[in-house]
Amino acid sequence: MKLSEQAEDIIERLWIEVEEKGGAFMDLYALNLKPDDEPVKELIRNALAELRKGMLYIRPEGREVGRMTVRRHRLAERLMMDVFNIKGEDADFFACQFEHLLKDGVDVKLCTLLNHPETCPHGKPIPPGECCAEARKKGDLGVVPLTEFKSGQEGEIAYILTEDNKKMQKLMAMGVLPGNRIILVQAFPSYIFKVGFSEFAIDAALAREIFVRML
Ligand SMILES: [Zn+2]
Ligand SMILES: [Zn+2]
Image (cartoon, rainbow, N blue to C red; front, side, top):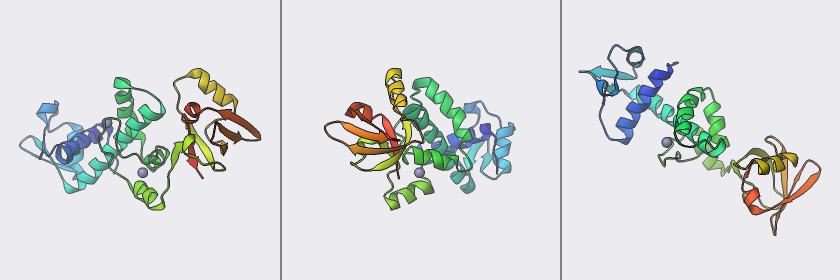
């Protein structure tokens, strides 16, 4: 089933209303929607929701779809704020656009990149996916700051999280780039790591901004 973005946004709000706010339905008119609006009809046609007296009710089939839509939205929020470092209204705007792209396994990739986060930046729970349960079972730590590595541990650089352009350039000049292999040689008194054939020493503050995927 492929839903339009507008239909996804409605089922997302409906799910939050019912599952998190303890409501039973959503008042369409309060949302400036009408029963014969195409996205509303789409939800009804797909048996995800039903309409009674202008109120939209979620159907059992709609619960799972709504849950996954909320999951994608909150993962997108994490991506905007944690990785892209976009905050405030801009983050909300981009998250709302981006969530619709997180399909066909892209959500699993993003969830893994973000280390299967349990909450969104607003502290709301992210409904877990199968990838989260599996990672927990395997004790898979996914992506962590370099400071979590032990000496001798090898990983792949996932991303760099810094607001400082100079730091970013410094790291890039060392070859600290997404996809490159990195070995932590020593964690004390400074962090010494190897990328390619070169070794570099950095302080803990900078090491915390390098996110690596354990191998
Ligand atoms: Zn949120
Ligand atoms: Zn996950």
